[in-house]
Length: 304
Image (cartoon, rainbow, N blue to C red; front, top):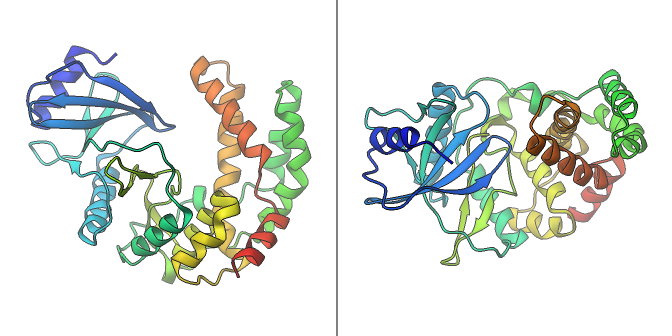
């Protein structure tokens, strides 16, 4: 539960008015928890960060959100404090606020997601700095081997799956080439899991905190891989994208860093039981369907 001090801090700093009922825990992601606040001014999504958050970074992602909203993209309105900040620091976490959006449980159609991404890529928002290593650098042979050795030594139940995938994961890294600075712009970088249907039948894009510099075609390639069997539908709706193997560089880099992150968290006895369990679940799911060189070839054949 959020403390009464935190509730009072949020409602006062963001000018939300008095709460009309106790806040409700709504969801948990890798970067934070989400609480539903109901106040005399409406309903709000309050995000409690589980990782360090810099105000300048938060202000940058809000600037991108506002540019996207101005271009007609559907997203929850970010709320600033009464002194024009995006975040406030509570006793144990950094917090930020969005308007609340009621979601439908039905998944959006792949074509709708592809068309929405095309609209987002027409928002030519300048990047804030170069593309970071998480999105641009391969894990590398030595790091892959060290990760597999550590997992096997620890007796992790997912270690055999990692070992089996290792040759493909190492080979995949050779497709990663540096981004072209001339093509880099601000992208969402965390689709399609954050495109949802709303209860009124529309679409909404959530979780913009991970947005930042990327090449649009690389974000598209990552989206198509995530969509799997419906990738061709999304590619057609996007508008005839012409992808090459190196366009999967971002998907490859992110897959490597995520597998390493989840493996380390799953093996770290200092982590909470919840974090370790979540990490093991993500590892199991990712290793059941890893991106591979053959997968890149098959996907390109499917969408061409």
